[in-house]
Length: 383
Image (cartoon, rainbow, N blue to C red; front, side, top):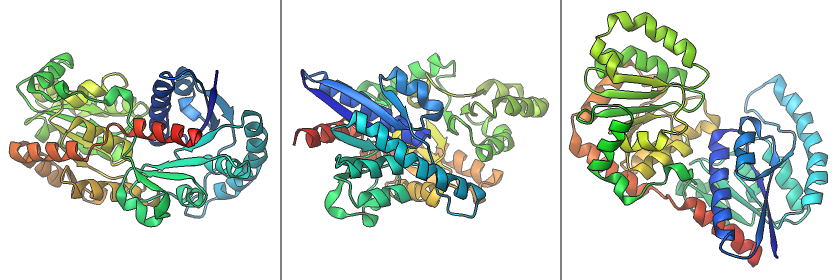
């Protein structure tokens, strides 16, 4: 039986790991159609996603992770030595695995792994999620066999002969069918989440770790927005406890009906798909993963880019997505309660605009990105 060995590498954030896992699942599906056996191994620092990798049947080979910051920090010195140490680690561990191909989502920790792959003449495929490519992507692009991008705008920074626009791989849980876009599906989803089917629902996503700026904004406008719509708010696992204490402190000044309509939760691990189907409007950060999942659901959005994101990539993601006509953008510096509340209410009061944004989101979406990338990986192996 033929054995296919694929090396996987990525930074330790959800923006890197979820797309990587989506591609791994697509690879397994494709290889199951053949008589070959697939061996997937992750090289790097898995961080909090170790269990996700193991559950996906991916073996883990730990390589020290290092990060180059674009500002002065003592940690740059420490991470320099971690990078030096990661090279012999990768040389030794990759030698014993010796994959047919390496696929990387980039990010801290993957650079040494991919340089070692180049040393061993292992074909490298990289995927860049953001509209502005990272330093790691730019460095690896010089010797990568194929560069796959979520955004066409990123191609201007990379060797054009190697580029393919695929979109961003999304989790299998948030791939939607035609029936999910029907009014009946939205009603059923609202009922499942215990919301009123006759009132608009705003879904607010701050990521698994939450977003302090967005959480603070919600507390400031809850009285005004909660009077107009229902709200499902992913607060974040870490800040949830302190957030609920703050909410309890201000709840005395809020109408009981508003509090009844407001559902803050730590994390929508198993309910994200249902929440996206139920939502009439999504408010989110502007990470590529979030944008492409919102687009796949065909939901109009308000994006609030993280001002301190590396290379300012969230701002670029947001403005590129806005140019597709699928969202509004509010910069963190402009996230005043009066401005934000006004934009939210004006959108809810304009169903025609919401419908147009929804249509544009679906036109933008590329829900088969993981399958496309998996096919490209197997094509390079078989070439």
